[in-house]
Length: 340
Length: 299
Image 1 (cartoon, each protein chain N blue to C red):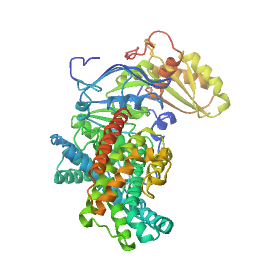
Image 2: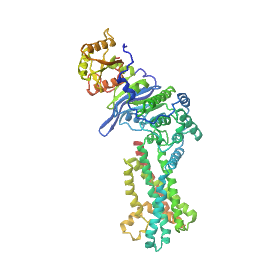
Image 3: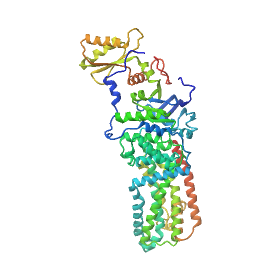
């Protein structure tokens, strides 16, 4: 990674956590530089939350090392705690208390005097649009409101590093966009954010760098652009009029584009990756030729779209090759996209 | 790098954006104000680390807030003690002491101890319920004195113990309890009882952290509390018990507590029993406090 000499917010090597006979985290190496959003992307059960809990001093690593701003998470846990905040998947506030009471409680625990605690609580509730709900018990909050009070609780003292563990899981698109705005505002003030998510779009939207995790290991690491280009130049999405013709269309596209074709869950649709062949023909040209080929075989295309590979495709491609324990580099340690 | 544009409009790309939306009642939520948020975040100065006493008191305040919001939880320290006092006075009074008023003078300090010691188990239930929720993880990532959340529970519970003692005392006075020790003796007795219960509760913080569910915490509590309270000098004098049982009563700290409280309320300062009670309390804190904190840090 290019930022080896700049101070790192998080640095782990060979981090391992075992539950029973399951290696939830199986040797993770991370290097997160300060002042950015770092995305940790992976499906349910990939080990994201376990990794975050170890970094936030909630779980003891079984092997390996982890340092936060240079402090070891085991030996120097208190120093780590004074610089980080964690917002978990579930609301980590007291549901029986009101919004105000929750924030005042935490502000007092962080050492604010009574008046300062009240003042800061009021400011945060205002900024988060929660003033009207300030005196209601959190158990009566909606999902979006809970997420806000939760994040507000995490920034009572502006943390140097904020862990957001799946901050938008279960939220509707509007609430999700608002959480993204909050994250951007927090980062703009210099806080480093480690964000775990299963939504590829979210990592793409927010993160400067992304580690893709599966089965407790980092299977790819890089900027969103690097990850995308490691999969190919893009893809063509095709929607047919007649689902009966999908098999034929699939083999035609595979033949002309020289790649694997993915049949979408929608029975009318299929997606073909376009590899960067390096020849004079651009991807768009080759895609349109392939589509022409479909027309010649009497296959009617209702709709098509060309796009850069979505992180969905990146993820499927990466986890797929990981499962097959393929060729060159599935060594488990972080690596850049091969095709950069 | 590539000539492909990023203007994908296919259904595939759209799907990324809309899965996971299940919330329905977001309508009136005002938007976040990023400028205001930035203004709050600019303040990077941190107050000095609060003292162990201050954070424990703050956690105690949390327990008070919970009582304010869920007052039903006070049933166990109001109605339950009243029921116990009435039940045992009229059940055993005639048979054991010839008259209920006579028996009440013997029973009341003991039944007070029994009720309060039995309500200590709710500490374990409260700890266990909090762990199920995410709020515990928040407390554990704070840079504070580690035992503070536990001490906070116990401080809040101490208030409940005082309340339960007061309720029983009032019921007792109405029924004809006339303590010879006067106000001072009664207050000293209650103080000793609350202090011991604070120490005893560390058993429940340990089980609250150790066991998986609220039900199992309740189950274990009963297994411990029934023998400790009934196999004692609370209801009857131990003289008529078989020898092996008297041995148990002799080492049962609750029996020493009862003897001390009974004497204090009767106006005698029973030095040995008070000392034994305080030593038992110190041992309970040393053993179960340590085990609690070990579990708390490992969890």
